[in-house]
Length: 164
Image (cartoon, rainbow, N blue to C red; front, side):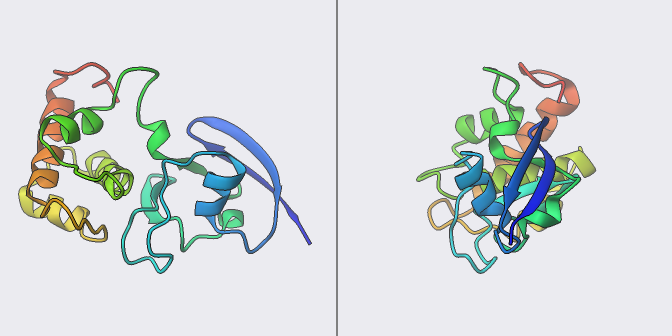
């Protein structure tokens, strides 16, 4: 049995027929070809699959695609506006908030949800905002620095694409 799914992904309406048990992460990667959302642990422990669902960061390996029916999903591909990187993406690069990069999309999405809710977080609030994401390379220091730098950029409008 298949079901119809209508959702908005990265601002574009999508209409697909999917299996009811299809996970959102697999819908995004396999059906839509949005491979920036990574499959890490498949147990909701690592956060590599984090996307934004109606403004909230969720681990897409724990959400069925049909649960996104009628809702809005933003993936890491939806952060940038055309060629202009999102301030978070720029900050992760300039503040060395990534190494291997596997966890980076999940961190970016968790941080984007945090900054949408709290545009001026403290260091402690950033730690809490990203606590569901794991990185085995960086030790988190530069990730937190990157989020704080992006927050400042977004508040002050000092980077290209900072109107997001």
